[in-house]
Amino acid sequence: MSASAGVILDGKVAVVTGAGQGIGRGVALQLAQQGARVVVSDINAETAAETVSMVLQRGGEAVAIGCDIADSASLESLIDIVAARFGTLHILINNAYLGNMPGPLETKPVQDFARSLQGSFYAPLVAMQRAFPHMKAQGFGRIVNMCSLNGVNAHMYSADYNVSKEALRCLTRSAAREWAAHGITVNAICPGARTPAYERFAAASPDNAALLLRQNPMGRMGEPEQDIGSVIAFMCSEGGAYMTGNTVFLDGGSHINGVSWQPAVR
Image (cartoon, rainbow, N blue to C red; front, top):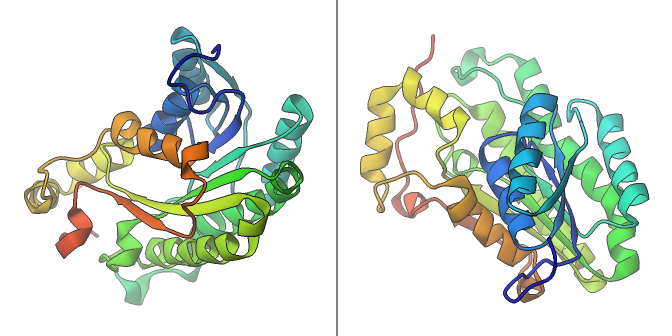
């Protein structure tokens, strides 16, 4: 996309993990809309290609580079490939995660916790550490970590996910504190959006999904691109330079009094 009035990310190189669908896709589309060259990273090559096609159809720039966040070496390779291809990296959106089935804490396998921590803590950590030298060298970096209201409010039957997302929030604040002097901002987002994952939850627990909407002050789930992506695009721009170490709730106000997340378990 060529530079034009109102484009706030012109010339920036952005990596979005888990960008083949849902929030990741919405963020990728919005970053590209604002002029960034976007690397769409996903384990699913087909959905990643779909996101790239959507960006290109709108006149933006995007390429797909596969990555498996279960493998730290794959993440290191992703960042290295991006830096070699584009010469640098300005924006890192850690959105991908590794999901598990919901279940009560007393029977949650330890392996579920290990898997969640790999996807939502160790994977972002590896990507951040690999991206840091490039961001430090140019005196500019924007890192956004996708966290969750599940962890903030300790929602039921997702203890492994909750723990990993709260660990990521702590990492976000630590990195923000240590890397601010290098012009690198690090923030967390707790989103509430209509994604394929949400649709699966709603199909399995329709009564709970309906209750969530009633408890949401705005009465709806957010749209990944407009409600989540547009805010992240601003955070990644020059205008977001003084914003770091924050947890931003993009959930229609659900965090104010909390919501009753209680998925069906077997």
